[in-house]
Every structure is written in structure tokens, then in C-alpha cells.
Length: 291
Image (cartoon, rainbow, N blue to C red):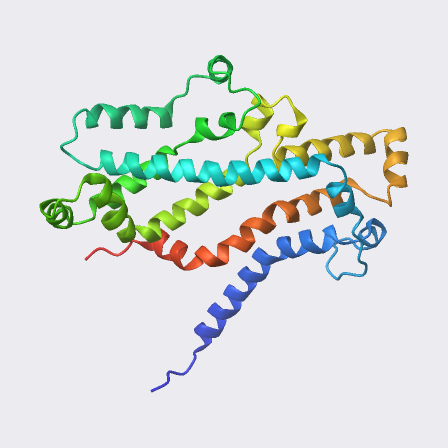
């Protein structure tokens, strides 16, 4: 029998719809502003209804040869970095999930210690320099090869797997590598999909280590390239000569470039997310219900 909706149900639905509108409106404003003409934006106190269509901001961002290098660098760092992240996190978590592993307590204490303290920026930079990793992809990948938080999450997830599965596989002659990749990983696939997405987003948004260790413009990832471009345009717009130059470039203004850069950087992740949404939702809720 179908239940009748009460006044409380309508109130809850209206409240949730209001929250959805509040959450979506900033993204909507970013997208329409990135395609808007500066004059049209200035006419409205809050640009809500699109009244123009202008690609000048995107043309300026995509102009030049260095944008191609930056996109390629971001793709390499994202793909290679995420692969290294998942390989190190998965293998390390599987080994540390074994209570009989020699030195496990010392290793876990050292891993947790890194969550609370760091060696400092100067020793970190000198270490990367002494390893000859300046202006290399390794400087953007290896220092963040593993996240302590995700490693602990994977350790907890591996411990939920019944030991009988592994013991029966060992009786049949399987080694630890076979058990990990053919038995254990398929069981925790939802959790791995969620962690992979988090790692990929972090690698795609990488700019800090590139700013520290990259001195060649051709090695800049897209995030650092766009950041430097926005800083240059904003600086130009603050003085009279720079404002005149910016005005000549099809009325391009810093806010439009900022919105266009946000759209460009979030589009790849938004295209990938729908394919991982099912596993992502299952991964973040796995273990929430205890029996």
C-alpha cells in the first residue's frame, strides 16, 4: 500500500532541494561566467542569466605552445603517479596487515609518526636536489608515492578478509603475490576504486612540488601553468599600462580567466567520475554497517 506524503515529507524535500540549489549554484556561476563577456557580467550584480557567449578567456588560456606541454605533463604525472600510489599503497598495506610480519610494530609507528611531524621544507628540497630529481617527473611523483591515511584505510580493509581464503589458496600452492592480485584485490575493489579516484584528483591538481622543483617552463603541469598565467594577468590589470594591454585582448579580464581555468581543470575529473561512481559509493560506505 502506497503511503501518503505528510507535511513533514514536503518540508524535507523542499529543504533538500534548497540545499541542492545552493550547492550547484557556484558551479553554474563558474561555467556561465567563463563563457561570458566582461561587459555582460558587469551589468548584473550577480551573473545568473547568461546574456552573452564569448570564448576569449579560453582562447587566451589555450594560446601558445606551453599549454600543450603542461597538459602532457599533467597527464603523465596523473597516470604514472596514480599507478605508483596504488601499487605502493596496496602492496604496503597487504604486508602490514599481517600480524606476524617481523618489525610490523616499528614500521607502523614510523608511518604514523609522519602524520604528526615532517623534516621541514629545506631538508626536503636538499634531499630531492641530492638525488638529482630537479626538473624530473620523479620529483612530482615519488615524494607523494603513498598517503598515510589511505595506507591505514587499506590495512583496515585487508584485515576484514577472512584468513581462511588465503590459507586455502596457500594449500593449493598459491604464493603471496598470486593471493594478493587474484583473490584479495577483487574483494576490496570498491575501496580501491575510491582511493584511486582520490589519488588521481590529487595528482591532477599537483602544482606545489612542481613550483618547488621545476625550473624549466616545459616541465610545468597544467595547474602551475594556469596559476602563473593568472598571477601575471592579475598583476598586469593592477597598473595602467597592464590594464590597457588587457583591454586590448578582446576585453579579457582576470575573473573570466579564473573561471575558465577552473572549468578546464575540473573537466577531466568530471568525465572520469561517472565511470567510477558505483565503485566510489560502495567503497566509501563499505564497513559502515556492522553485523
